[in-house]
Image (cartoon, rainbow, N blue to C red; front, side, top):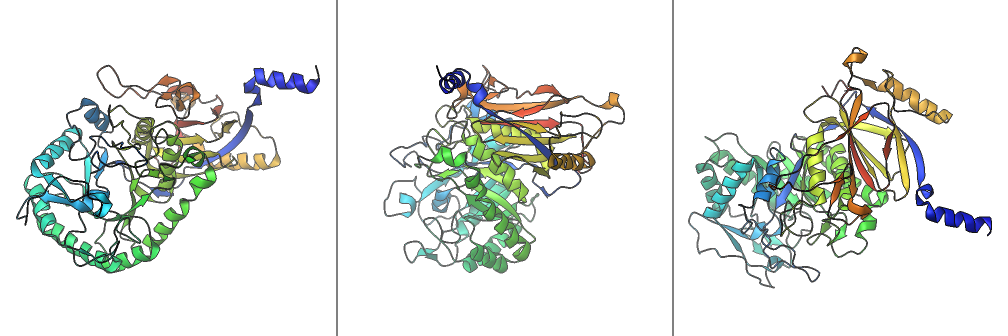
Length: 538
């Protein structure tokens, strides 16, 4: 047997040896925050789509609409309460078709029915006040922070295939908000319209007209909340970023009117795309959306420094998400990377489409059992605080990294996302208090990097006895190594609801600080350094 044949057989029998091991050096700058998120950064949406909403020969919505969602299901309440004030955005494409059954309506409102010649193929729908009462009782019970998206097409006329013109008729919204205030319902923010900016999705409204209507809505909120505190925020436009449209909108609406600019992201394309997994694992594709974040921040700095940026809706793949992709482990590579990238670009809130409904729900539409992304969202919410820190490294673009002040406690949390299917990364961070992670100085370049690391990073602890000599690790992998598994493992153990339907304990593994840090291929790891000394993370 020749040597080449022997080597091939040997590598086949020992596949682990074929993996690439790469050491990397990381520097986390704890001296300054490069951005700051809202304390309730993680947000999820509830939509209006009825069960008849279908795409690509499937109808994945079931009874997940705001109209018919089973609010009594224990898994639903438990999964929201686990966040201790989860932000929920109520809205979506059909919000511009919703009539509120309150006040002096000209005619009764009816449920959505399929009508091919209408916007998005559905008639107007109806929100009855008894259902609104039920929803608010549920929100109060679960501690949710609610953003409600208003119908911004009411009163306008369609003048061409997509263009809608005329002033917004605020009468129905006025009566609905008045009812909400009179009941004492706490609404964190009102959002005006859905995907009517720029070229619009299905319909569009001129930016100048939109700005004038938002001024009108702002005055209406001032009037109705005159004797009710706190006054909700006003969000707009809830659509895709268009530089010229957003600039005009801010100029017309003027200072202090809009509290947050909400924009939407679906950077993975249609849910029917057979290449979704490859897109999710391609760092070049993930990086493309950075231009949108950057351009929006420039627009705000120049045209509306009084406002802030929110991602009001982001589902990865549009039209219900990708079957057997958006609801599986692999989607967390995209989702957590989005959360990290958006935070760097001064995004205050990031709303995931959806909490339940379609293929991209954090919960399964039929069983209400959490999908993998639910646990990714919950870990982010519990570990990644408001303060965003700069991370520099010499790693490949396949190793994504984000650092934040740890949420509601001292220290720093580092998120590592390994998109590579064969590279096992060793991550080296140096401590100035002789608590090391085995930094290896293999070259002059690395020696220089480590010297900068030693000058910048230090650890809490006046005496060695004061220092907690461990870090927390939360290592996420898929069941059986299957990227499209519906089951996520935390430190090797399946994340499953308890017998009582409660969210399981998300417990870390405690690792000695002197132990090497590693990230296996196609896995995700949150690492909490409780004693990382950072003057901005106290």
